[in-house]
Length: 250
Image 1 (cartoon, rainbow, N blue to C red):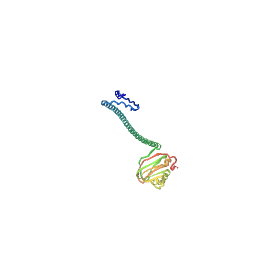
Image 2: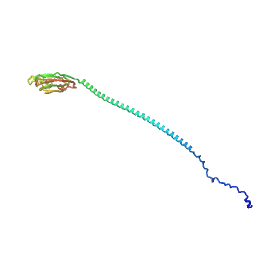
Image 3: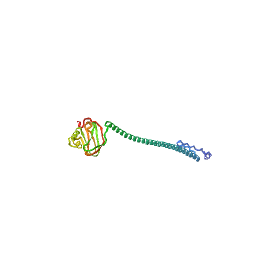
Protein backbone atom coordinates (compact mmCIF):
# COMPACT_ATOMS: atom_id res chain seq x y z
CA UNK A 1 0.00 0.00 0.00
CA UNK A 2 1.22 3.38 -0.84
CA UNK A 3 1.47 6.21 1.68
CA UNK A 4 -1.09 8.12 -0.34
CA UNK A 5 -3.44 5.37 0.12
CA UNK A 6 -2.77 5.17 3.80
CA UNK A 7 -3.46 8.87 4.24
CA UNK A 8 -6.83 8.52 2.76
CA UNK A 9 -7.75 5.93 5.28
CA UNK A 10 -10.06 7.11 8.05
CA UNK A 11 -8.44 7.45 11.43
CA UNK A 12 -8.62 4.41 13.58
CA UNK A 13 -11.37 4.13 16.10
CA UNK A 14 -10.68 5.30 19.77
CA UNK A 15 -9.13 2.58 21.78
CA UNK A 16 -11.19 1.23 24.65
CA UNK A 17 -9.26 0.89 27.85
CA UNK A 18 -10.26 -2.13 29.91
CA UNK A 19 -9.45 -2.04 33.60
CA UNK A 20 -10.04 -4.60 36.34
CA UNK A 21 -12.30 -3.91 39.34
CA UNK A 22 -9.29 -3.64 41.52
CA UNK A 23 -8.19 -0.59 39.65
CA UNK A 24 -11.38 1.36 40.72
CA UNK A 25 -11.75 2.93 44.25
CA UNK A 26 -14.85 2.14 46.44
CA UNK A 27 -17.83 4.35 45.62
CA UNK A 28 -18.31 7.34 47.93
CA UNK A 29 -21.65 7.70 49.85
CA UNK A 30 -24.09 9.99 48.32
CA UNK A 31 -23.77 13.42 49.83
CA UNK A 32 -26.59 14.59 52.20
CA UNK A 33 -28.55 17.38 50.82
CA UNK A 34 -27.47 20.64 52.37
CA UNK A 35 -29.57 21.95 55.30
CA UNK A 36 -31.04 25.21 54.50
CA UNK A 37 -31.04 27.99 57.18
CA UNK A 38 -34.83 27.77 57.56
CA UNK A 39 -34.67 24.09 58.40
CA UNK A 40 -31.95 24.71 60.98
CA UNK A 41 -34.08 27.40 62.63
CA UNK A 42 -37.05 25.02 62.83
CA UNK A 43 -34.94 22.25 64.38
CA UNK A 44 -33.39 24.64 66.91
CA UNK A 45 -36.81 26.02 67.91
CA UNK A 46 -38.21 22.52 68.38
CA UNK A 47 -35.25 21.50 70.51
CA UNK A 48 -35.62 24.59 72.71
CA UNK A 49 -39.33 23.84 73.14
CA UNK A 50 -38.57 20.25 74.09
CA UNK A 51 -35.91 21.36 76.61
CA UNK A 52 -38.23 24.00 77.96
CA UNK A 53 -41.05 21.48 78.36
CA UNK A 54 -38.69 18.96 79.98
CA UNK A 55 -37.32 21.62 82.34
CA UNK A 56 -40.83 22.80 83.21
CA UNK A 57 -41.87 19.22 83.91
CA UNK A 58 -38.78 18.71 86.05
CA UNK A 59 -39.52 21.92 87.94
CA UNK A 60 -43.11 20.85 88.47
CA UNK A 61 -42.03 17.45 89.76
CA UNK A 62 -39.41 19.08 91.99
CA UNK A 63 -41.90 21.65 93.28
CA UNK A 64 -44.43 18.90 93.91
CA UNK A 65 -41.83 16.87 95.78
CA UNK A 66 -40.78 19.89 97.82
CA UNK A 67 -44.43 20.63 98.56
CA UNK A 68 -45.01 17.08 99.71
CA UNK A 69 -41.88 17.20 101.84
CA UNK A 70 -43.00 20.53 103.32
CA UNK A 71 -46.45 19.16 104.11
CA UNK A 72 -44.94 16.02 105.58
CA UNK A 73 -42.49 18.06 107.65
CA UNK A 74 -45.29 20.37 108.79
CA UNK A 75 -47.38 17.37 109.84
CA UNK A 76 -44.41 15.86 111.63
CA UNK A 77 -43.72 19.13 113.46
CA UNK A 78 -47.37 19.38 114.46
CA UNK A 79 -47.29 15.76 115.66
CA UNK A 80 -44.10 16.42 117.62
CA UNK A 81 -45.60 19.54 119.23
CA UNK A 82 -48.73 17.59 120.11
CA UNK A 83 -46.65 14.78 121.61
CA UNK A 84 -44.55 17.28 123.55
CA UNK A 85 -47.70 18.93 124.89
CA UNK A 86 -49.13 15.56 125.90
CA UNK A 87 -45.80 14.57 127.45
CA UNK A 88 -45.67 17.80 129.46
CA UNK A 89 -49.25 17.23 130.55
CA UNK A 90 -48.47 13.66 131.58
CA UNK A 91 -45.33 14.83 133.37
CA UNK A 92 -47.36 17.41 135.27
CA UNK A 93 -50.02 14.87 136.15
CA UNK A 94 -47.33 12.43 137.23
CA UNK A 95 -45.79 15.07 139.48
CA UNK A 96 -49.20 15.88 140.94
CA UNK A 97 -49.82 12.19 141.57
CA UNK A 98 -46.37 11.87 143.15
CA UNK A 99 -47.11 14.85 145.42
CA UNK A 100 -50.52 13.41 146.32
CA UNK A 101 -48.92 10.03 146.99
CA UNK A 102 -46.33 11.69 149.25
CA UNK A 103 -49.08 13.51 151.15
CA UNK A 104 -51.12 10.30 151.37
CA UNK A 105 -48.10 8.36 152.63
CA UNK A 106 -47.50 11.04 155.23
CA UNK A 107 -51.13 10.89 156.30
CA UNK A 108 -50.94 7.09 156.37
CA UNK A 109 -47.86 7.25 158.58
CA UNK A 110 -49.64 9.66 160.94
CA UNK A 111 -52.75 7.45 160.94
CA UNK A 112 -50.66 4.36 161.68
CA UNK A 113 -48.98 6.17 164.56
CA UNK A 114 -52.37 7.28 165.84
CA UNK A 115 -53.65 3.70 165.65
CA UNK A 116 -50.53 2.52 167.47
CA UNK A 117 -50.98 5.20 170.13
CA UNK A 118 -54.69 4.43 170.51
CA UNK A 119 -53.98 0.70 170.73
CA UNK A 120 -51.32 1.34 173.32
CA UNK A 121 -53.64 3.71 175.18
CA UNK A 122 -56.41 1.13 175.17
CA UNK A 123 -53.99 -1.45 176.51
CA UNK A 124 -52.38 0.99 178.95
CA UNK A 125 -54.85 3.77 179.77
CA UNK A 126 -53.66 6.70 181.89
CA UNK A 127 -56.01 8.03 184.59
CA UNK A 128 -55.88 11.02 186.88
CA UNK A 129 -56.11 10.04 190.57
CA UNK A 130 -55.28 13.24 192.48
CA UNK A 131 -55.51 16.84 191.27
CA UNK A 132 -57.09 18.81 194.17
CA UNK A 133 -54.76 21.24 196.04
CA UNK A 134 -54.27 20.45 199.74
CA UNK A 135 -52.76 22.42 202.67
CA UNK A 136 -50.34 21.14 205.28
CA UNK A 137 -50.54 23.22 208.47
CA UNK A 138 -47.21 22.25 210.00
CA UNK A 139 -44.78 19.44 210.86
CA UNK A 140 -47.29 17.28 212.77
CA UNK A 141 -49.50 16.75 209.69
CA UNK A 142 -49.08 14.58 206.65
CA UNK A 143 -50.83 13.80 203.36
CA UNK A 144 -50.94 10.23 202.10
CA UNK A 145 -51.93 8.65 198.80
CA UNK A 146 -52.22 4.94 198.14
CA UNK A 147 -50.12 3.72 195.22
CA UNK A 148 -52.45 1.38 193.31
CA UNK A 149 -51.42 -2.14 192.31
CA UNK A 150 -50.83 -2.99 188.57
CA UNK A 151 -50.22 0.69 187.73
CA UNK A 152 -47.21 2.89 187.05
CA UNK A 153 -47.52 5.75 189.54
CA UNK A 154 -46.72 9.23 188.14
CA UNK A 155 -46.05 11.41 191.19
CA UNK A 156 -46.12 15.06 190.11
CA UNK A 157 -46.38 17.78 192.78
CA UNK A 158 -45.64 21.46 193.29
CA UNK A 159 -45.79 23.53 196.48
CA UNK A 160 -45.39 27.13 197.61
CA UNK A 161 -42.76 26.15 200.19
CA UNK A 162 -40.28 23.37 201.03
CA UNK A 163 -41.87 19.92 201.33
CA UNK A 164 -40.66 16.37 202.09
CA UNK A 165 -41.94 13.49 199.95
CA UNK A 166 -41.38 9.74 200.36
CA UNK A 167 -42.88 6.50 199.08
CA UNK A 168 -43.12 3.94 201.89
CA UNK A 169 -44.07 0.31 201.98
CA UNK A 170 -46.80 -0.62 204.45
CA UNK A 171 -44.13 -1.92 206.84
CA UNK A 172 -42.13 1.32 206.58
CA UNK A 173 -45.27 3.34 207.20
CA UNK A 174 -45.95 1.24 210.32
CA UNK A 175 -42.42 1.93 211.56
CA UNK A 176 -42.95 5.69 210.97
CA UNK A 177 -46.17 5.67 213.01
CA UNK A 178 -44.37 3.86 215.86
CA UNK A 179 -41.60 6.46 215.64
CA UNK A 180 -44.15 9.24 216.19
CA UNK A 181 -46.05 7.34 218.93
CA UNK A 182 -42.84 6.54 220.77
CA UNK A 183 -41.84 10.21 220.75
CA UNK A 184 -38.78 9.68 218.62
CA UNK A 185 -39.69 12.64 216.45
CA UNK A 186 -42.54 14.59 214.93
CA UNK A 187 -44.47 13.42 211.90
CA UNK A 188 -42.34 15.38 209.46
CA UNK A 189 -39.24 13.67 210.80
CA UNK A 190 -40.44 10.09 211.41
CA UNK A 191 -42.19 9.69 208.02
CA UNK A 192 -38.88 10.09 206.22
CA UNK A 193 -36.35 8.66 208.68
CA UNK A 194 -37.87 5.27 209.58
CA UNK A 195 -37.02 3.72 206.25
CA UNK A 196 -38.29 4.67 202.78
CA UNK A 197 -38.39 3.02 199.37
CA UNK A 198 -37.87 6.39 197.67
CA UNK A 199 -37.86 10.02 198.90
CA UNK A 200 -36.73 13.65 198.54
CA UNK A 201 -36.51 16.38 201.22
CA UNK A 202 -36.87 20.17 201.15
CA UNK A 203 -38.09 20.47 197.54
CA UNK A 204 -40.77 22.60 195.86
CA UNK A 205 -41.56 20.22 192.98
CA UNK A 206 -41.54 16.50 192.30
CA UNK A 207 -41.92 14.57 189.02
CA UNK A 208 -41.22 10.87 189.50
CA UNK A 209 -42.52 7.59 188.00
CA UNK A 210 -42.77 4.76 190.50
CA UNK A 211 -42.96 1.22 189.04
CA UNK A 212 -42.60 -1.14 192.01
CA UNK A 213 -46.39 -1.17 192.56
CA UNK A 214 -47.00 -2.68 189.10
CA UNK A 215 -46.91 -6.10 190.74
CA UNK A 216 -47.48 -5.23 194.41
CA UNK A 217 -50.21 -3.48 196.45
CA UNK A 218 -48.08 -2.39 199.40
CA UNK A 219 -47.07 1.29 198.95
CA UNK A 220 -48.14 4.78 200.06
CA UNK A 221 -46.95 8.24 199.04
CA UNK A 222 -46.37 10.47 202.11
CA UNK A 223 -46.01 14.28 202.01
CA UNK A 224 -45.00 16.44 204.98
CA UNK A 225 -43.57 19.93 205.50
CA UNK A 226 -41.74 21.69 208.35
CA UNK A 227 -43.96 24.77 207.82
CA UNK A 228 -47.44 25.39 206.46
CA UNK A 229 -47.55 24.92 202.63
CA UNK A 230 -50.12 24.34 199.94
CA UNK A 231 -49.55 21.27 197.77
CA UNK A 232 -50.81 21.25 194.17
CA UNK A 233 -50.89 17.67 192.86
CA UNK A 234 -51.15 16.32 189.31
CA UNK A 235 -50.90 12.62 190.04
CA UNK A 236 -51.80 10.07 187.38
CA UNK A 237 -51.49 6.31 186.95
CA UNK A 238 -50.98 4.15 183.82
CA UNK A 239 -52.33 0.63 183.72
CA UNK A 240 -49.29 -1.58 183.30
CA UNK A 241 -49.54 -4.84 185.21
CA UNK A 242 -46.28 -6.61 185.82
CA UNK A 243 -45.77 -10.18 184.67
CA UNK A 244 -44.50 -11.16 188.16
CA UNK A 245 -44.54 -9.94 191.74
CA UNK A 246 -42.54 -6.74 192.33
CA UNK A 247 -41.07 -4.66 195.15
CA UNK A 248 -41.99 -5.34 198.76
CA UNK A 249 -44.35 -8.19 197.80
CA UNK A 250 -41.48 -10.49 196.78
